[in-house]
Length: 133
Image (cartoon, rainbow, N blue to C red):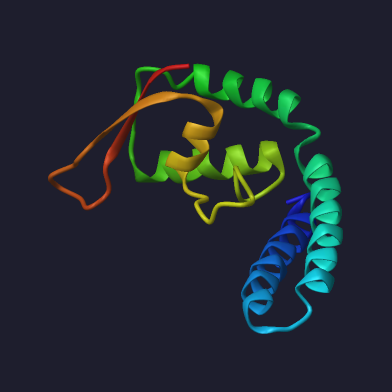
C-alpha cells in the first residue's frame, strides 16, 4: 500500500506520545516533556494531512465500487476481496490510523455505508448485505 510507511510512522508517534504521558507522571521535568509532546503532535499532524489528502477522491472511487454491491449478499471470499479493494483504493490499512480497527466493518463505517450482518448457520462467518450508501 502506498501509505504503509506513513501509517507506521504515525502509529509510532502515537505510542511515543502515550509513553511521554506516562513518563510525565514520574519525572521531574514535565515542561520539557510537554515541549517534546507538542513537537511530536505537530509532526504527527503534518503526516496525518499527507495520509488523508486523497480521501475525497478515494471515497468517490470506493462508493462507485460499493454501489454495485448494494442489496447483494456477500460471503467470506467476497468480503475479503472487498476489504482488500477498499484498502487498495485508500492506500492504507486503517480507516483511522489512531484506532486499531482495520476490518471491513470499520471501513464501511468510515465510508458511511449502512449494512446488515446476518449470522450464517453453516459457517462462523456472517453474511454481509450493503443496504445503502
